[in-house]
Length: 106
Image 1: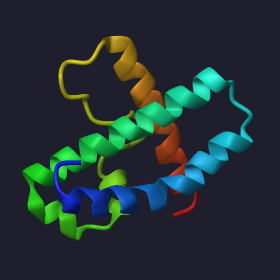
Image 2: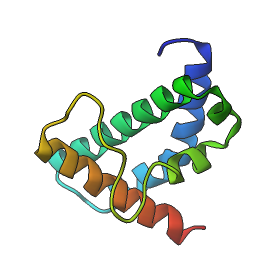
Image 3: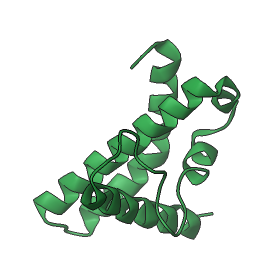
Image 4: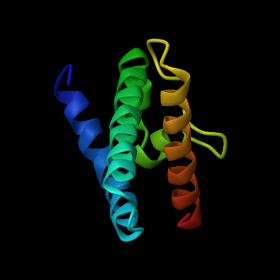
């Protein structure tokens, strides 16, 4: 968290992501896979908050829109800091699953 507005966006993102997290629990994933998905969702939230800090107008958009503008059927944004290709692929896999989940309830 950089400042209070980050906390507000983080909470709004969590409200959108919480049903997906419950969906992941219901899938009976291994503990390792589940934890990797949760870690990737945490990273996605950080990437969205970083983007909102660079463009304050994004703070006016809903959390759902911010997420759907960040993920698609190909994955998520490129991770900042030059992530390892395996980490990027894992992140993209989670983002694709999230995108499919959100689109199924559009």
